[in-house]
Image (cartoon, rainbow, N blue to C red; front, side, top):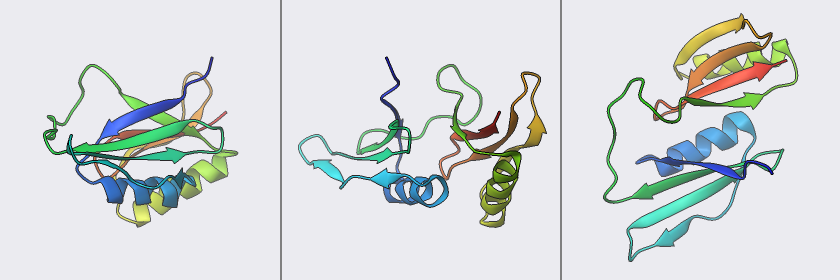
Length: 127
């Protein structure tokens, strides 16, 4: 069994689509629109086949910011410590929030944490 996709609600559909394509090499499908439900989405596919579904619906609004039960973060594996450092600095230079500075975790991962434009946390990891 493999994880097929993770889905995120957003009001910034195009901005998030562009973010995941630009920084993580995602490939997007054409926008799906269901006018009867006020729904539209993109699937962003990544190298290993896992996908991120970005969704917008007219009746879904922002939630309170901060820790809550449910999805905490998701992670992208990179090929080296240097790649983690380079992407962290690229995101920072482009004005994206770095929520966790590069470090080696207790379980041996070299990682940092960045936030996408909606504040979803993304670990950049190498092991």
